Image (cartoon, rainbow over the protein chains, first blue to last red):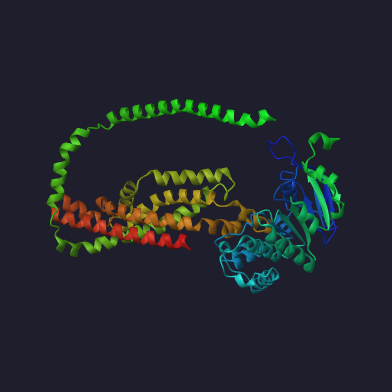
Length: 249
Length: 273
C-alpha cells in the first residue's frame, strides 16, 4: 500500500457536523482511485488531511508504511495536487508556474532570485511535453484556455516528481469534451510514471469511465468502496440521496 | 404543492413592503447626517455669503498674474527639476519603508498578530503625521535643501503605501497560495511566487499615483525650506511679484499634467496586456 488512511476524522472549529467521520481507505501503488460524492461530502477535506493542508482531528495517514508527520515540506512534495480552479499564478509564464513545482526541493535563498538549476528546467520542460503544452512555455498563464491551464497545473504537479497526485475536482469547471481530455492526460501520465492518483469527482459518468476503483462518500463517511462495474442504482442512491437517518441505520 | 409554488410570489411582495419600510430609517439617517454637518458648519465658521463677496478680490489676484513674466522661467527650471527629483526619491524611499511594513501588516502573509499590529501601528504613525510636518523635522535634522524634502515624502508616503500594499496582498486569489503550499514550498517561497506576482500590478499603480501626488506635495515642501519649487512660489507671493507667481503656478500645472498623462499611459500598458 502506498497510502493508508486510518480512521481519519475532521471537525472544523465551530461546525456542528464533522466534515469527515472515521474514514479508512487503503490505496495500492499505481491505482487510479476516484472518490465520488456530492458537494460537501468531505472529499476536499480528505485530500487536505493527507498532505496536511488541513490538520485531522483524529486518525492517521500512512505513506509507504510510515505515519505522515514531521517535516511538512518533505512530505508535501511527495503529493502533487491539482485543483478545480487550476490555481496557476496568472501573471507568470507557463514555465515559471511549472518550475514552482520544484520549490519544495530548493533552498529559499536561491529561489528568491527566481533562479532555478538547469536540471529543474529540464524536468519542467519534460513535464510540459507530457501534457503537450511545451509550445506555450513562455506565454502568460492567463492567456491559456481552461483545459490548457489545467494541463499546465498537472505539469506543475508532475514537476514535483510525486509518488501520489491528489486531484480535487480537476474537471468541475471544464466542458465535457475538455474534461475527458484532461482526465485522459491525468490517467495517461500517471500510468507512464507509475504515479498513484486520488481524484475527487462528483460526476458519475466520468467516474465510471476513468476509475479503476471508486470510493463513494456521503456526509463525511465512506459509503461505497468497489469497482466501477459495481456502481449500481442502489449504490448511487446511497452516495447522493441518503439522509442522515438512513445512513446511520 | 400548489401552495409551495404560489407562496414565494406572496412572500416576495411581503418582503418588498418590508424593505420599503426600511426606507424610513434611511431618511432618518440622512436627516441626522445633515444635522451633524450643520452643527460642524458652525465649528468651521462657514459663511457662504462672504465667499461670493470675495470672488472679485480672488479674481483680482489672478488678474495681476497676467501676463506671466516668462523670463522668470530661466530661474525656475532648476527648482522645478529638483521638485521632480524629490517626488521620485520620495517614492523610492516610500517603497523601501512601505514594502517590508506592508508585508508584515498583511494578514495572509504574516500570521503573528503581534507582528501585524506592530507594523500597522508604525504605518499609522508615519501616515498620520503630514509630509509638511515631517519636512519641518527633517530640515531641523539634516539642514535645508531637497534631501529633507525627499525624506519627508518618503516617510509619510511609506506609511500610506505600506497600508495600500497590505490591502493589495490581502485581496489576492488564495488558490495559488494553497497550490504552492501543497508543492512543499516554504513560506518565503510562497510569498515570492504566489503572492507578490499577484499583487505587483497594484503596487506599480499605487506607486505611479503617489508619484503624481508627490509632485504636487513637493511643490509646497519648499515653503518650509525642504527644497523644490515651493520656495520660489512663497517668495514671489511675499514680494507681491504676481507675474512671477503666475509663471510658477503655470509650470506646476504643466508638470502635474505631463506626469498625469504619462502615468495614465503606463497604467494602461500594465493592465492592457
